[in-house]
Amino acid sequence: MVGLILAFVFLTPREWFRDQPKASNLVMIPAEHGNAFFLEPELLDGVPQSEWEVKAATLVKARTGNRYEIKRVKPIFDSEQEIRGYMAFTAP
Image 1 (cartoon, rainbow, N blue to C red):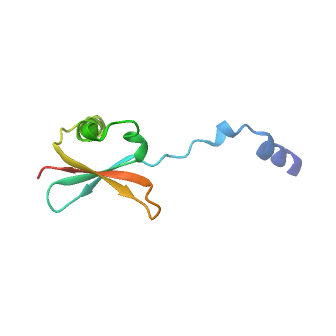
Image 2 (cartoon, helix red, strand yellow):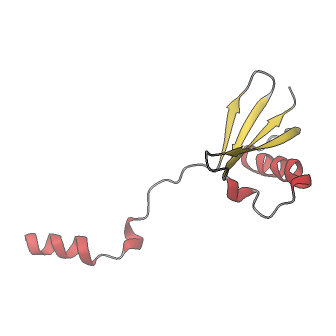
């Protein structure tokens, strides 16, 4: 019986165990004036900085179903100056 359990654990394809929920890559954060959204860095990869607001508004609308006016998008850096995400701020 132990052999069968060990065989199941070690010989089962990994794809069978990949059913864990994935964290959201876009999160709404209440702010003093309006709302803010945290966006994972891969959401704006390859997007020119001049188009960040438009892309962020499109992503937020697709996720929430509501249209928000994004006023600015600010990159969030870690201690090694690598981008860890973006904060998109909305109009109040």
